[in-house]
Length: 192
Image (cartoon, rainbow, N blue to C red; front, side, top):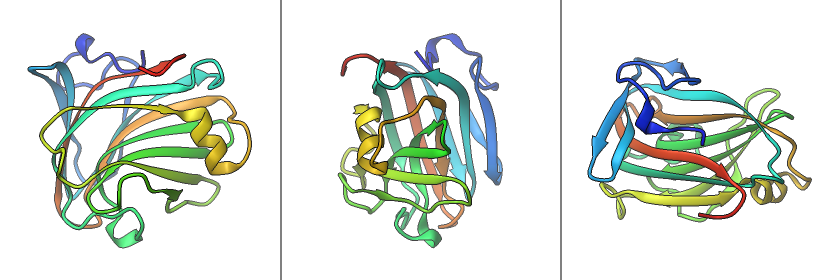
């Protein structure tokens, strides 16, 4: 298990996690709702994430599973343009070769799109739109993705070791507000 929301204190990142701020002020905390303990993220014209180191051979535990819920999408967010590249929720998987697969809940990009995202020098990011828009807002959605297969589809070679994981939210490009929740996040050998 990578994020066990049942075992951490409010006001601090969960054990083993660090807060990484790209822009603005982070708002996060432990929460509890009808489906159990969770992590709450809110972005007011900000960009931040919680990340942790992971050392994993994706061929042995290729499935990443998590629960998430979006309650406010960043207005006009669309990862396909730099000026609107904001999401209410992202799960980023970093590999040893400075390549990343990001699973996103986008405001407008259609569900199912998988393509290169904005990259930085020496870092390549491939985005998979898992959810889009507000149709499933305000309810928990369970996800299960084969990161080894997604990496091979994105980069045309077998996936190297996973070195990190980040849960992120951002709304700085659109100057808006975004809000989301995460439940348990785990790597597994079989789909959930």
